[in-house]
Image (cartoon, rainbow, N blue to C red):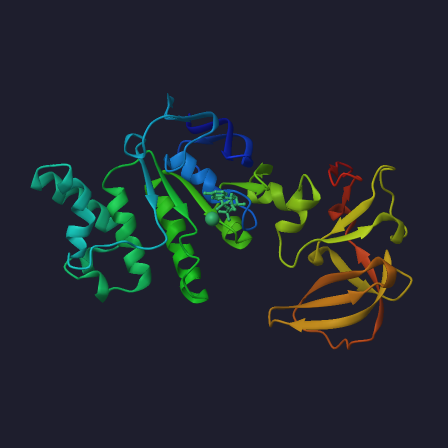
Length: 340
Ligand code: ADP
Ligand code: MG
């Protein structure tokens, strides 16, 4: 069953179109992530779903009801904001129960719902504390708790982890994954971070300039990117893109102008024995693996990933051999050609 459906939705600011006709079906219980570079329209699209931005054209269907013209309060969605917006003078219990108290629910019912939210979010031990006595991650959970008690059709998140430090971001990413596992609610989550998208999403929607570049599972986007944009956006270090004319000993479709190969799908061989030759330019040792940036002359640079360390030195001449099942081909318009 579809939980939220977008039908040809557009957003115009005066003469400027920032969402260019987006069609998307989100299934009940799905964790969908909107990802793309800054300015591609992620927040605008999310805010249109929430009802915080008017939809210029098209339709937004929520739980089989046309919600396009509904105000945010009627949509049954919970937007979890990046800033925690908790009431500083209230305990965690009162913060979580606040929406229910405002709605006039009986105290006993509020207690049941708040206790349930607290146990799902592992906040039981903090119920009497004030927000200032909590860590950033705990505050975020309280904010989510305040949404859970309203039993929304879906949770909407706009870059909830972007102002946290790297360690806390990893911890909160884990918390959000656990939260989705236990709530099984529909979630739409916006991020510019492809690692966050890959690790959390059931399906990723890659946006580029107000259009959907591709929709798919993390694995589909990694293994079968539909175009150069997605090929280079998903995966780190990014996929190497080489002009077809610079690569030797590969058979590929005639219309292929570019060849894509990921850093993890290249191995080093003696010069002349691979698909392209180069010299070692820079070595980036990361412990578990090493990234090697190769200078391939007119063909440009290529990065490859080795497990562990290497005793190679900058300046060494090497051949690069591609894993033949893992090459990608793109036409002059940057669209992937299925050739594998
Ligand atoms: P993202 O969240 O992907 O970084 P946004 O959805 O915030 O991108 O913005 C998408 C585009 O819409 C950007 O080019 C932005 O400048 C433009 N935009 C956002 N809000 C307005 C506005 N109120 N008036 C005009 N343009 C806007
Ligand atoms: Mg944004």
